[in-house]
Length: 416
Image (cartoon, rainbow, N blue to C red; front, side):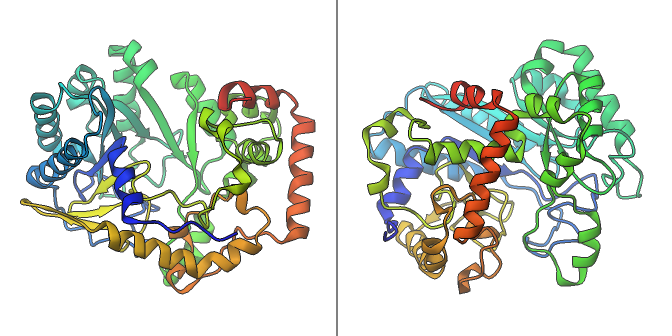
């Protein structure tokens, strides 16, 4: 089946239905984490120059989007829009955050249901928690577990950040318990100094919460750092298997954050015949829908990301060389035709692999994580028939061992 070509209208439609704006508030950080995506292992980002995103650039993007919605007669009244703040460490530029919040709520609050979110290392949380609570920010706090687990999250003097972060998070929990329960979540990066079991037990004991587990990004690694990176890297799936004593409980508690459960859901969605993600899926024959190579999101289908340098990207997780547009203090430059051409060109390069891959119906591979994708790089998620047959058997085995997951998947993740 031929893949569907993106058009300028495809790109525009995603922006018309945009649900999240992410601002890179600053490229400065008060920590120097060894494995940071902007750190020593990687070479796929703009040079960190202790720059802050200007309010004028952010305002330009906000006004551009609002004008686009208005001119296109989109019903944006009471639209839910999440405005997210990212870094660096965003609390280092709190003045920008307050400016954006004030501008939105004096200019667009009558049209939009605005929510705020932030990813933070919590070093400055004690200074600004009152403001964050007042405006109901959703916080994603980076904490890898106990003191030993936090060993790679150090300040610029090499001092472990655990004591300061733990103290601030505990202060937030004690001062605003209701807010902490509803608005605070954690992200823990797996590496060679922690593990799934210890993170789970620590977070449950100290905060009564599960932490989202993340692997180190395997894309954009510097060649001279590959050996060192491999020593630090830990596979989320393999580490989960080592948690033998807590295995059943972790499957239940972590649920969709368990790699095998997520893959089981995707498998059931495509092959069970009675599972759908959205009600509209009931109205169409999926086999007749043209597909998009890889599991790459349509540009701006989930969010739009603005860097401190005024670059527009589809999200904050990819190489900053993949620029889709630019913003300065006066205007936004987004060429929908050029964006569509870029995506279509890459899709054409990788289409042959996708057509031969037996799991292309539920591919999760973002094309921006494929090395040399613009030259038709090799996708490491590719499966031939034999590999796919083994994969199907593994899904059935996993479900047989954990039959309770079927009901949870059906009731919590799907329409059936």
